[in-house]
Length: 89
Image (tube, rainbow, N blue to C red; front, top):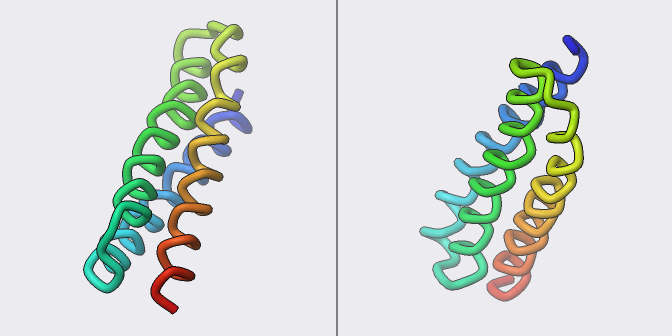
């Protein structure tokens, strides 16, 4: 379970830093895509890392089925951030 916790922490930290990039991008490239990227990163962190944290703390293995939804939100956040950058390039 320590490896699962490590994955949750790594993704949490990486995407917390990505939120800083979104804050910078929102000033530079305002619009719906950069705003969506921020909210998708927040949702992804909560669902992906949160489900893994809860799985480690409670032992509820069924939470592993929820984790990919958070992963999809994180991927969508990166796509939205790239779209914001491409629109203003």
